[in-house]
Image 1 (cartoon, rainbow, N blue to C red):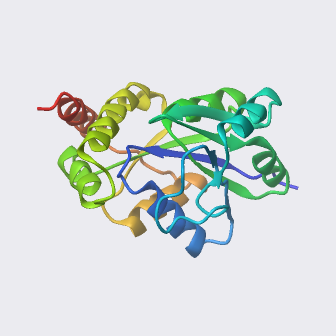
Image 2 (image 1 turned 180 degrees about the vertical axis):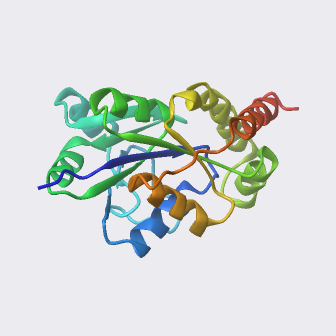
Length: 208
C-alpha cells in the first residue's frame, strides 16, 4: 500500500489556517486532520475532540515522558502537541495527514519525519493580519500584542519551510495546497513578497 503524505501547515495567528484546513477536510475525501492536544481551555464554540483534545498539564507532561507526542511546544502560557499514534497509523494506511501547528513544532516534525512537507500560510499584508486579530473581539489588546510578538518570533523559522501560500481567498489557498500535495508543479510565493510580510510583522511587533 502506498504511504500517505504528511502536510504540516503553519502561519501567524489570525491568518486563517483553521478555515483553510476545514475547507480541505470538507471538500476533499483524502485528508485526515490530526487533532492536537492542549492545556488551554476551550474557546466559545470549540468542541473537544474536534478542535483540540483539552487535557491537564499533568496529562500533557505524562505524554511527553512516555514519548507519545510527535512534537510539542509552549505558546502563550499553554502546551500544544501532536499525538504520534494518529499520524503514524494513518500514513501507514495510505491516508494523507494534515498537521496545523506552529513553527517550532513543525520543525520538530520535519526532524522526526523528513518526508513531511512544510507549508507556511501568509496573509495579504501585515495590516490585514492585525485587522483579523482585532476583528475576532475575543482577545484583549495585551493578547493581540503578544500574538504579534509571537508572529515576529515565527518569522525566524519561515525560511525553513518548503512552500509559502497566500490566504487571500480560502478556496484558492486550499487549491494551492492540493497542488502541492499532488506534486502538480506547485509554485511558491515570490520571496520578495514573503520578505515584505516578514518585515511588516517585525515592525508591528515593535509597536510601530
